[in-house]
Length: 328
Image (cartoon, rainbow, N blue to C red):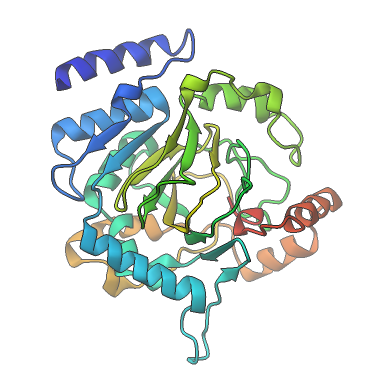
């Protein structure tokens, strides 16, 4: 079975230069041991990322650990962190969703995901040696009828530090489902990253992805409804979108980038005691700060182009005012 999948995937990768191809048969991998990829599982996940632009990994975090991370996310998304200590960090709160941008200072489980050896070593095959965390957040989305955001790609980064810039850097994002997702799952158009880059990167910064360039082949569209503990990995240049959940959905998002990421980034805050001693050789994932002195940050805020201000005003005026307005 594994040999057949390997041959099939190799054909897909080889043909990709001619026409967009994909292989749904490779999309989902069931782990035998939570948090660990054996050789066959690792190979299958790698081929799916190459052939489809994404992979779905069931049982990445076991039930008890997922429940612990879920409890932590509920606490900080509702009440913030450090309240009453003088260093309180508030969550983002909106009628449609809650977000907390610093999961690694409050969640041992989140820090464990970010430094998981199987995951980071796999990411190194795509992002090179010692990738870094580009962004991370807990997110709780409440039931809704409308879709928060249509099909889009992620080229922006910390808009205050990189005003008006699209960054071509290859990034992989992970989404860990913290509860069973039976509706409102993550949606992706398989192997769409090359097409999307050509159609969108040259367009004006404030322009949304043109609908006429969204592939119409419905067979390439997948929506991921999976149990808690499932991890999704995907190429952020591929077309993706949330769908409308009928029940509350909780996730941990982590964006990973190459060490030579071209944009300016703030520091990724984390608690050292949450990182097990045998994983501390992976602390490089938190070493992300670049081009982010306080002077530069405040100067960027005060000198945002009027077109960017108008765009941010438009985004923030939406009913769902997500942190994605500031940071993809």
